[in-house]
Length: 171
Image 1 (cartoon, rainbow, N blue to C red):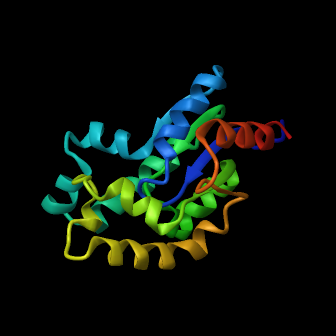
Image 2 (cartoon, rainbow, N blue to C red; image 1 turned 180 degrees about the vertical axis):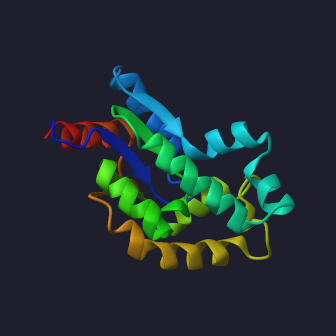
């Protein structure tokens, strides 16, 4: 394996980062799975939606930045980050430097189907969530494409995604 010891999963909400991260950890038993949103919720004692409501998105983004800096120390981690975290240039630089970054790309209809009933997505709790999701995807895609690898998950199953990531990680 090269000098980059962490596997970092980026992508839109509902792109499968947490699911794939957990499955990778089952396959790569010497790796530890960490989800930055889960860490933030545990340390704050609040759900992400509550942090947005009680404080602000800016407050949450600062927590996210500090959490990413913390989890990138060390190696042999599978790191799943929130959908908007890769927008921050400092987060992006840290993540690209401390691991192999995989963009789990999904098409809009699949993302929307997955999140349509999920009330834990604070940026989508508005009128016309599909249009909001479309605009988010359009805005974020430019930065997501800066990942080391892009895996289009729209037409392949979880096992194939895992295989592709493991192959790239071991190369």
